[in-house]
Length: 148
Image (cartoon, rainbow, N blue to C red; front, side, top):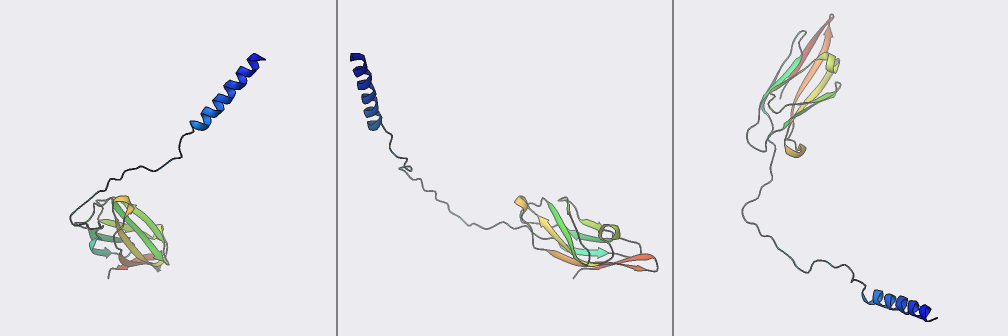
């Protein structure tokens, strides 16, 4: 019995130590480190393309050309869409200054061409737009376009 009492005493003592040695509840750091900054802060912008124009004609694609933007955030590429009666979309490299759209790519009809310069993190410039159309005239396809 003496051995049983010893084991019981050891178990009771271990339980008491567990109650006393329970770690405290988690707390937040007891310190703070404020950061100060000075100067003028401005949001970055992706500059839109300038000088956009287009060409079209009999059995010709519609080709939009532009002058690459200067200033603003670094351009990573361009994104274009065509919406309306015609639909299409795509992306272009950062050094691109034109895109050709064919009837085979878009079909017959008309639509609005939208071009965005794309910057870091997918940020985009304001849109630059134009219109385009493809019609069949006596078995030949005539393309047309305009930029406001």
